[in-house]
Amino acid sequence: MTNTRLIFPMLLLSTFFTPGAGAEEKGAELSVMTFNCWYQFTKVNGGITKAVASIKEAGADVIGLQECSVETADKLAAELGFHRAKSGSGGAQIVSRHPILETFDVGGIDPARAVAAKIHMDGKPGHDFILFNIHLDAGHYGPYAARPTGSTSEQVMAEERKSQRTRQITGILESMATHLAQSDATPVFLTGDFNSPSHLDRVEKTTSSHPGITSMPWPATVLPFQAGLVDSFRLLHPDPVETPGTTWSTIHKEGEPQDRIDYIFHKGKGIRPITSRVFAGKAGKTIGEWGCDISPVVDNPWPSDHAAVVTVYRFGPK
Image (cartoon, rainbow, N blue to C red; front, side):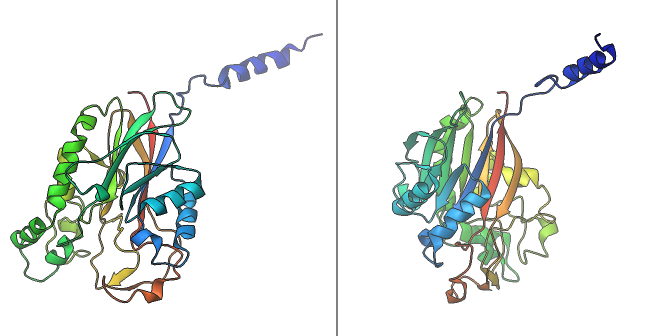
C-alpha cells in the first residue's frame, strides 16, 4: 500500500529544492591583481619563489605587474601555468590564467611603462575583457612636496607638473578612449603603480595621517575618474579613515609618507567589484624612509616594497 503521508512532504521538497528554482545564476568571477615587482623581485632573497606563492595565496586570475621584465614575467607565467601578454617589452607586464587573445602597445607613454591586452575568460562565452597596465613616473613625488610645514597647494601642484605623470595618464586615457566607449560590451580594467595619492584619500578628515597639504586634485587619479573609470577599492571602502588602503610602503615606514598609490580601476556595465583588498602576505621587517639601507629586509617573506591590490569582480547581465 502506498504511504501517502510520505508522498506529500517529498513533493514539497522537490518544489523548494529543484536546482535553480527561484534563484538567479551566479555570474562568473574574475580576480584582478596589481603588483609592483620591486626590481624584478631581486631585492629580496628568493623573490620570484615568494612572488609565485603570494600570487597563489591571493587567488589572482590576471595580474598587472610593474618594475617587472619579460624574463621575470615569463618565469612567473611558467610557474603559475599562466599566459603572458607578448607586447610587453619592459617593466609593465601582464600575466593571466585566461587565454590572451590580443596584445597591443599603449600610446602617450614609454612602451616599457605600459601594456594592454584583450583576454578571454576560459570556458565563459562572451566574457572577454581589456586590461591596461601602467607604471607612472616616480619623479617629483607629490607627498614629499606636500609634507613640509607651510606648503601651499600651488607649490605642490607646481612640483606635480614637473613630473611626467599628468602627460602619461593623459596619453594613456587617449589610447583607452575607444575601448572605454565600448566598455558596456567589453569591460575595461586599468591597473598600475600610479606613484600618486588619490584625490579620494587625501582629504580634510585624513589630515592627521597625512601631515601638510591634504585636499588636492591629484591628476593621476582625477583624470581616470573624469574618463568614467571607477576606483574599485575606494568604491567598496568609501571611508579613507576607516580603510586607508595604504600600498606605499610595506617596508619604508619611519619618516616616509604612507599612501595608497597602486590602483585597480574599471569601467563597464557588465561587471561589478564584490571584494577589494590590499594584500602583502606575511609581515616582515621595516626600515626608514625611501633611500635608506635596505639590507635589513632582504629576507622578508613579502618580495616587494609596495603592497599589492586584489579586486574580485563578478560578471553579470550587460
